[in-house]
Every structure is written in structure tokens, then in C-alpha cells.
Amino acid sequence: MITVFDDAQRAHDPKFFLASGAQHPCPEKPARVDALLGGVRRFGGPIVCAPELGLDPIAAVHSARYLTFLQTIHARWMRIDGASAEVIPNIHPATRSDGYPKSAVGQAGFHQTDTSCPISAQTWGAAYASAQTAVHGADLILRGERSAYALCRPPGHHAFADLAGGFCYLNNSAIAAHRLTAAGRRVAVLDVDLHHGNGTQGIFYARGDVLTVSVHAHPERYYPFFWGYPEETGQEEGTGANLNLCLERGTGDDGFLRALGVACDRITLWGADTVVLALGLDAFEGDPFAGLKVTTSGFSQISAMVHGLGLPTVIVQEGGYLCPELGENLAAALSAFV
Image 1 (spheres, one colour):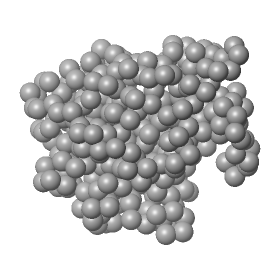
Image 2: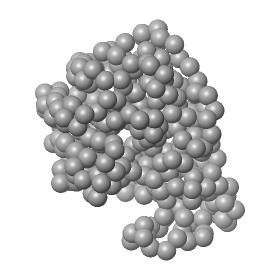
Image 3: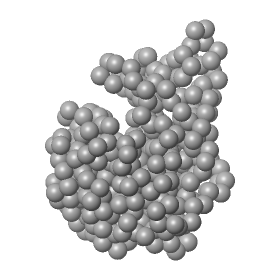
């Protein structure tokens, strides 16, 4: 199996992370790359860098004003007297249908849903490289590969068309899914991250050409809190094309795999011919976020179940944070595909 990775993704090194009112070092660190590459190298497959394909595949999913914001906001922010080293919002609109401000402070509040997506001078370049990685992963599937792994960092599944959030800036899984759909594939996005893939859901919520399925910790007491409930099934043309499978905190392998079985059944019934697997490894029992209790062996079973769908699959890296087993967990999650 081919792995796609661009070393430019290392440049993004966020410092600020606010959780439950307390400031902590951001867990979405460049060191994640080394742990994940360690997992990839257990199989000895080729690692390639994505070709430069420009903004078009990204702009197919994200709005023009949002992309302009991401590219320019840090330089604008630095012109503010006394500004923080990273762009961090301190005010938000009641809804995104409210007025769109011209100020850097106002636009930060508009486009950043929370404080866990700080923007530095290096953020855009790393996020752009991460998105290009996902695009090339999709292109490998279109060229006939049965599977490909896109090592995307920063992750993407909390990013909406117009919003950053939860360590995410560009929605790599959605970008890959749209790329495949535009080429005539019937795509299902299967998100197995600890956290609900709210940005991916939002991007496709009114579309009927992409099925979005997420297995995650129940949001009533867990990030992202406001999205990911079972009653969210899509709207307009997308009615019935979204499925949320919520797990109680502390759920282990058995409960996760039961929910994944429901997810796989829906993908089969929907008639998907290609899967985008939004792979979060933070459901692990030893992950710093400590929400679920999937084991390393459990990731092998997840891999086998998704592989059992018998569909071409691009695997896009989402969460999974620094712990001694991170690379081992990735190897387990890729095992059935290699």
C-alpha cells in the first residue's frame, strides 16, 4: 500500500490549547508525524509526496473567503498592537448568518469555532500540504490502487466549508471524498475518530451523493458537543445520507465493533463503491483524550471489518495523539489493507 506524506506538514507547531477553562500545551504536535511514520514503516511500503495540484481541489469544498482568511489572517493579526503570537478568537457571532466583519479580530471569531485551532505563520502551508496529501490519496484510488494511506497532519474532520475548529483547518477527508465523487465514484465517508466528524457532516449534510457515517463518543458530554447526535440524518437532498453512531464514554472494543458493524451495513445498503476512511486513533484506551477504550487489537479488527467491505479505500489520518502505542496502533489499523 502506498503512503502519501509531505514533510511540509511538520511546520505547523501550535502552542495554545484551552480545555475546560485551563490553558495546556497543544497536543496536535509535529512529533505525531514521527510516531505515525514509525507505524507505516513496519510494512515497508513506498512513501511518496503529493504533486502540486493547486487550490482547485480544496476550493471545491471550502469557500473562497475562508481560503483567503487562512492565507492572510496571521500577517493581518500581527499588525494589531499587542496581538498574541497565534491567531486565537475571543468573540464569536451568534450564528454564521450574522454580518461578516472586515476586522481581523471579527473574522477570526467568524471562521474559528473554538480556541483549539490557533493559526501561526506556518499553519496555512502545513494545512495546504495536508490537503494535497489527501487529494493524491484519492487520485491513487482513481488510478486503480485498492487502498492508499494519506498521512494528513494537521487533521481535517472538524473543519467546515467556512470554519476551522478542533485542530483542523482544511477538511482532508471531505476534499478526498469530493475528488472521488467528481470522478464518478459513489463515496461513503466512514469516520472512526473518537470525536464526531462534524465538519465532514456539515459539508455534505444537504448533499445526497456522499454518505457520511461517524462512530464516536456521544457529544452530549464530549467535544464537539453541538453536532453528532443520532437524529441528525441530513437535509434536503442529503436526507437519509448521514448516520451518527454514538458511544458512551469508556466503550471498548466490543461496543465499538458493534457500532462499526451497523456502519458497514449502511455503507453496503447505500451502494457505495469507494470508501474514505477518516482514521482517528484517539479512541485508543491510552490516548491522552481518554474518551473510549479501544485496544491495539481492536484497531486490527476495525481494519479487518472495513477491509471486508471489499471496496477501494483511501485512508485519511485524523486524530490520535502522542502515546507510546501510537505507531503500533496505526500499524494495526492498516494491517488488513497491507
